Image (cartoon, rainbow, N blue to C red; front, top):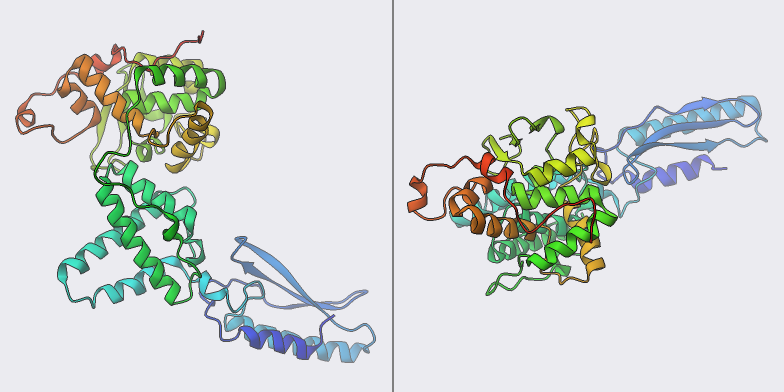
Length: 396
């Protein structure tokens, strides 16, 4: 039971908070019965749902006194809710529930006042890249408090793996992200810097290594026994060379069995161009065994648990699933999901020539000379390409 003075005290505690941008609520309502109470619902940002809040009125009061007390409580609540008070957000936490995009806009205001034009352009570009990453996620962050170690790690991995950046570029983004985190800390949107836990990558040598033929065979045997759905993702990465961010957007309707190709739309491809990529017969065989084509064309190829679904998974899920397998096989961290693409390009180039590998990977060039070489029939060549990563129902 809460007296009116307690309601006012609680409301005044939050009246200076700036969470009005995120508050959704229903007007306070009086309920009469065995026990009288006033209730309303308000958005709980941490849970992402509306929660009900009640304020009970003393049973010992007369009916007229209950009505007067209810009127007073409703008046106070209505006023404070309209001013942005939220019963589920404490004063210390309220700045963490500011829209993250609003934080970025405020950050850009500071960037625009920097002296060097090159720095302003660089930082603006990185904010745009960060926003591109956020929109690519299945569950993009919304509030400042969600800028945590998990989010920052996923972004840095996306820069390095999905965008095929060098260790130096990856480290440069890490340094910039660290500065952005300090900006958020200074304005009390977050309490600690999540980027400080992300290590700088050595730049003098390639951290990611390709997989040996023996490792590919070991992986084939393991995944055929334990995780065929994820094995399809691995085969796609190795044979089609389609990036994880692009794989996560593929739909069953993008696959043509007649032409043995996969269509990659400009809407989610890295170079923003439409492309058809050759589909190997080994990949097709596993798709048929998994009954992929019995699902609607509108389904994403990789949904929950890497099975076809109405909803797609985020690109970060490929690496997360890979780490489970890598741990089981006791491989070093330098072997990553993207190592499959390195290995695929290596093996395809050795088997069919560097030009075919260039076209299958959709690289703009290899050397100046190769810019003028006519494209080969990639889908016909790659259909019969026998690589080191194989699929057979009867594993060793």
